[in-house]
Length: 515
Image (cartoon, rainbow, N blue to C red):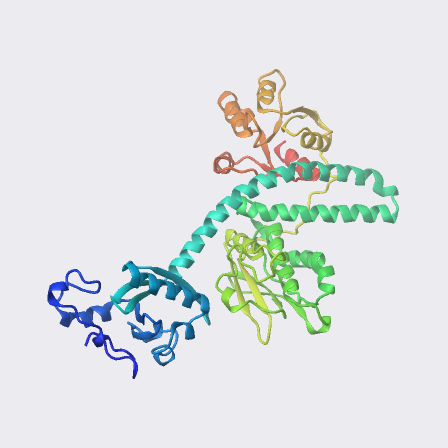
């Protein structure tokens, strides 16, 4: 007997026609080993095997591990294929049986099943067993499929990073001068403006902040972890974030935030705020419309000797079982088509891990989800989150500034921010090099990093070769169009970097620091 009888009434493996001694070398199932050893060889194989008759009935099976069977033998032995498996799989098995018995060539039948632990993928390879039956060797390809999917996601992430960098650069330049001009208009008009005009300014400012947040999302994929890390007051960040989300929350759920005085964490306030806002927004989206009193979004903080944890919980629909292991992967979403990109939680993970932290999601009872981020504590005092005072400009003096940007509007708005200095504006690296070689001495060179023709990097290297002390006065600006070379360049030179869209206060503060 090759393999024991598996089920009463089924065809036993020992009833398969034996292979004559002279045919053992060339027969489809023949092997050049003594027949007595065949049972041991078959038992050692890691794959499932099934024999299916010409009339598509399961006749016998071999399983190295009973757990590999998706159902008990009594559920499929002696039954037709279409009685056991889904119609599309049964059709492909039938096609493979007919074709294999017709020409003797093997066929591959890929298929998958949704199981309690998630979707699993298989591959059945056919071969002639005898003139009236086909042997299928079944391999579990789940691990391979998941690895291939991760590789595809990795490729998509790399492509997305390149796309994000270009898109951010194209948006940040106009956004920079829009924000700058809005600041000028507000300063001129708001003191005497009506409540309606002041409200319009607030609405425009809020909309532009949303655009800036979108660019920050793209920047995570373009060059994560580039922002300065410092002490961050977590409670302050949560307060600011919930103020933004409160209007959306008020129509969907009650907000619970038992505020605690937790230690400062090491990170970047805007990035941490972005993560928490994404988590709160996801929590709101997970709650189906209904009585507000029946739903809750809860934000909690805890800490220990080394870390601080922020948890966002909701009473929503929860994470589908098949997505629990992949919910932080890019392009994975439980939302309806057109309602989500599958990037929100991937961005949260990317930011959190770039800050040296971790993120996890778990279901709640009786319903809902909790997503928690854990960040490292900072030993120093927490950052107050205060921004530079736009009106606290340095007193005018004779400092000379060379401003280099290929976009005239960006250059103009930066020059306005520095109008108390002696500012010279040029729009190319070549023109800047010519100005630096001239007789005028410049105290600060404010230079766009990525420009057509001579880039800011090339300009800096040329100046560094000719006048190292002048190169030490460079401040770079960027709209996030970072190549690998640019990233390494910024890291190696350690020169200040202004991220577009910047506001006028940031320009003034940065230049004042250099002076």
